Length: 79
Image 1 (cartoon, rainbow, N blue to C red):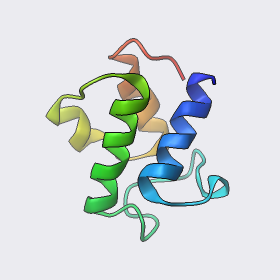
Image 2: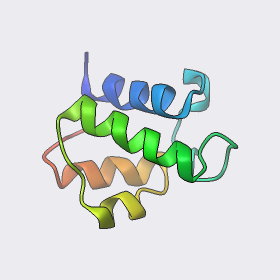
Image 3: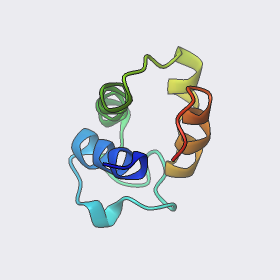
Image 4: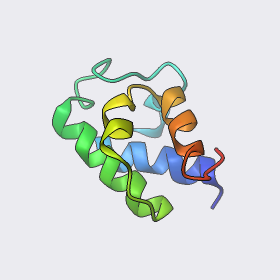
C-alpha cells in the first residue's frame, strides 16, 4: 500500500466517509463528518497508519486534505 493509499484510507476510516469524498478540496467542517469528533478519529487513524505521534500544534493546524500532506512531511512522510 502506498502512502497516498494509506492517507486516503485514514480519511475514509477516521471520518466514516466514502473514498469519493476524499480529495484535495476536502477541508475541516466542509462535510458533516469532519467535525471536532471526526477530526480526532482522523488523527488517530493517521497516527496508526504511519506509526507516528503528532504534536498538538500539528493536530490543530490539520485543516484540509492538502494541508495534512504538508504536515506529514515534518514526520518524514511523503504523500
